[in-house]
Length: 283
Ligand code: GUN
Image (cartoon, rainbow, N blue to C red; front, top):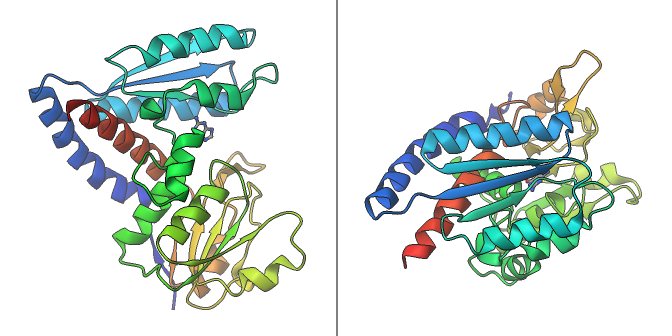
């Protein structure tokens, strides 16, 4: 039987509707959630992502600002700007779009953002809280994935979750969030030997490697839940995932598409984190 497709786009539309109401309530208390997105350079993919983030913020009523800086911006200029935003009471969330140019140390920038404004959930303090099971800002893509699973009442506890990829943005934190939900987690990566041995054992398979059609129906167990985090552009310029959708769909119980799957959820969770930050300021 073909899998049920989990559309992050539809779920996002519903969640963003609720967020509009939350923002309205905050405004009644005199607070407008504020998000500042900083982008350095002119990478077309990054520009397209940040514009999507801005559009979505506007729709739910978040006051979003986009600061575009050119490729020659120095690390100290960027740090100066972050310092200003850390001290600005109208800015509840700060997001520096990654990757950064080589002359800027990404980790220094991530650590400069005040943890209470780190709506990406990348600051070591927030990662530490996540690892110890505390409430904090969770990284947006992993948090979006957990939200998608929960929206379909998919059981996580006791399941074997296999995460393909170990990036700081997706692979590592999604494994941690699945562990927090009592899954048994296996990470596989470019140095894993015989990785298909592991993918075939997954009850929940999260694929985040950035390689078109890296996983196909042959690599998964019948009834698996397949989450495709890939956003690749193929030779015809079409967006494709890391999973070969048609063959995987025939074997899985649930599957996320690309586009309209995980991508919209990343932005939705960013909005969620920004609103949460603004609400925390009221307490
Ligand atoms: N680049 C790709 N994904 C992300 C993300 O979630 N946050 C930031 N800041 N940069 C990214």
